[in-house]
Amino acid sequence: PASPAERLKKNRQQARTHKMIQIHETDITTLSVDAIVNAANETLLGGGGVDGAIHRAAGPKLLDHCRGLGGCRTGSARITPGFALPARFVIHTVGPVWKGGQSGEAEQLRSCYLESFRLAEESRIKSIAFPAISTGVYGYPSIEAASIATQTMLEHESDFDVIIACCFSAADVTVYETALGRKPPAPSN
Ligand code: AR6
Image (cartoon, rainbow, N blue to C red):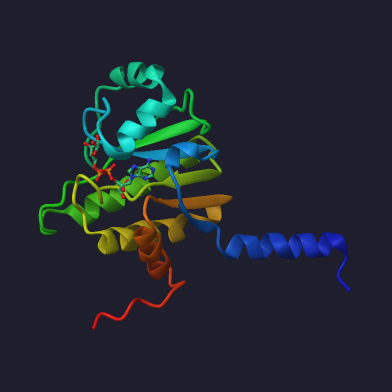
């Protein structure tokens, strides 16, 4: 029989290769992770959706801090403290507005995830949660967006203890499960 140390090593190896991308259906502001990602706009001065929820939960110091950043281009990201949030950091990224798919939206959305991961690695962040960037007010189709999100997550899986795809609806959970191949796609009739 394997020794406890061997079992632990095996579990760790399995943990590294399996399900380090977790899908949660929750309010991202409640997550106790090193960093949560915000789907912001270019001003970085707050807004509706997940951005509004993050600013409310973080408190006014977040807005004060963001005022000093001078905004952020679409596809880029900035990191700030989490202030009153349980998360230590917020990574603010600006997703593309969906204009039909022929305006570089996919590359910009991919860049949001890559830039967020880059900043996270620079700050030695080991646990990170992403909302479904651009799929609310900005109108990006959920299935296409989840395909880009999960692809970048799989590319960075080995650099983190956990990556959370934070969904705000049961429908989005199914979309992410399908994108990660954990559920067969629903029949399209
Ligand atoms: N936790 C997790 N996910 C959430 C939460 C929450 N508390 N609230 C909403 N979502 P959106 P966008 C989901 O509109 O499309 C803002 O005004 C939501 O259901 O927040 O990138 C900014 O300031 C959806 O799945 O972001 C920008 O102006 C996802 O988060 C603009 O909206 C993204 O929806 C950005 O639009």
